[in-house]
Image (tube, rainbow, N blue to C red):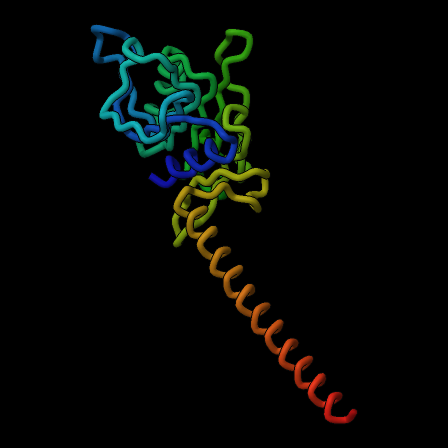
Length: 212
């Protein structure tokens, strides 16, 4: 998914290696498959980002998930009530819950963003806000609500206003390609300008020689 690509991009920007999972089943209690989650986004530092997995069993792995995102669907209780204690049991250090269905006006018990963190060994909600963005300590950036083709999306940014969005690897590659093409075009123009200057200097030298 796009959120997964953006998380990959953020890890690359920070010079870190991390595996990001999206909608794969995660198990943390051996022998009890009912203890499971399928996060919208899960970040596992230390794992190769190119590794392909169909599920994640914590007791079989060396590295532990540290960060997760849940995007609320119509089943509000699954993400609001059940999600936080399950992620506590999984052992992540930070959970961000994003609710795109928060109404623009009127009273509601819903919140656009909720952030749970593990601090000094205790797991608790530290942020609840309807702002357009929220900070992630684990990722070292901001999660922003943006509108793309009329749809609400979550993007990572280096600032709370979302003016500097984290690029996906594909976006970074396209930007590098555009920059390379632009530089090649500029280099061609410089060569053309230098050639014209040399021709003008040669013509001037011929004219001066004839005058002598």
